[in-house]
Length: 130
Image 1 (tube, rainbow, N blue to C red):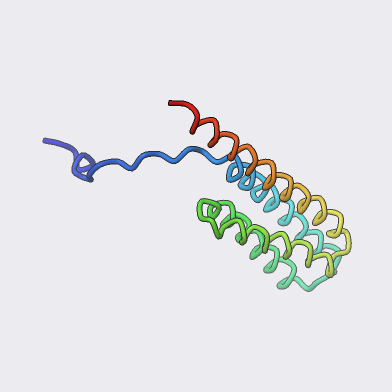
Image 2: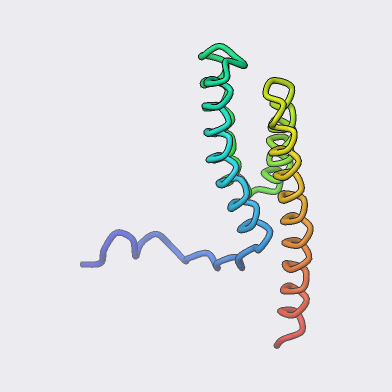
């Protein structure tokens, strides 16, 4: 008797790994940790009451983790840019976030540009090979 998985039909071919997606996931995952700590700082410095500081921070952290998974879709990258804007906007509440936000936007931009270039080069090299 065959296991039920054998009746599922033909397997889909695996897509090649995207460097842009990998780098974006790494940045968003790291940002989620930093934003968790930033929410604790905002609460500790009493820049915000507990619910907005911790609740907003938790919401942003969940968005960042979800954003890392959503990079498999084309619109996931736009969502990543929206998250970067939200991190910059948090600087209006905690001024040191201007520095953190600028660093992460720079890192995100670099990873998107370089990752896309590497993916294009890999696709061109694969098209040349028989």
